[in-house]
Image (spheres, protein in one colour):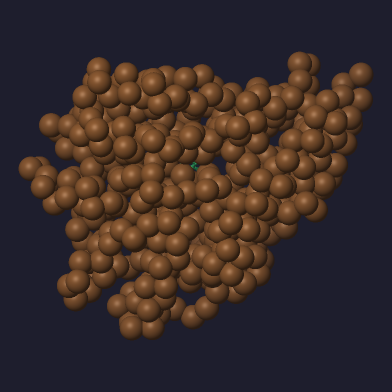
Length: 392
Ligand code: PMP
């Protein structure tokens, strides 16, 4: 290129082919996408209101209702990653007169409490160490004490690899006039979820975990109670982008004619459609069984190579993400780098308070196979051996 005017030269890096490594993503997400999902994501563009596209949106909505086990009218995808869905829940379900009670047993509770605080809304917290979960008694005590209008719990706390039991929590919340909001980004699809039966008022996930689709659109659903709360707000929703009244219309949940709100991530929606189809073909119960089986193979293998799991109590382990303690004297980063370089396997680092203290291994959707369990175990075992030897 010769410089002809005052326009700067194009960046040289963009004039070369994109450098793209293939990796097996065995961290806490994203998961690898199956070819079927990648193929769908590469399909030609459609307009956000084209009937062919809105039909795909309707299919996605049906798929979300299936994996959430809900009949909620207000079931949509928010444009953005799981965090955008978390923010949608926060912005729609809370207003200045409310009080949110946030269960903090890891990174994601902390994040939600921060989000609420930024809105100038009263936030109370209950705490458990990362790697532990809340009991119904603790929750009831806090509901009585703080009289919140919303309780936030993380179903699959990916920082501590716990699975919060949810049965009974919704009924308890409703007894105290409180809504229940659940983050199941790192669990739903891989473990049982019964949104309606468990009386969950708002539930969201991401696309890139068990659905094994590209991140960019995130399923979320609101119960009748949650929808009423949004409809009866005295203050406006402080976001145009995430206003559920607009999103519900665009996703044809309000019986009205669809109106343009924004251009959604069309290709991501194609991908989610296929990710949901994979789960529908497999059947939810089969998927739950597969995740449990592979997680058990992983636990067994980790113990065999002398590694300790963070969560001792088997009944509260999230099969989708497993936190493994870094043994004393081991360079956790060197292990991750060795596994990546030698096996092209991603092993996740610790997050938040557990950074440097645990590795996190994900087994979600397309990546949840016995072969991948064996691969990650082999990579981890060799990486540990080689990095220990290198230090001697
Ligand atoms: N909640 C949980 C439990 C998560 O694990 C994650 C992602 N790791 C998120 C929320 C946020 O999702 P995203 O990264 O897609 O914004």
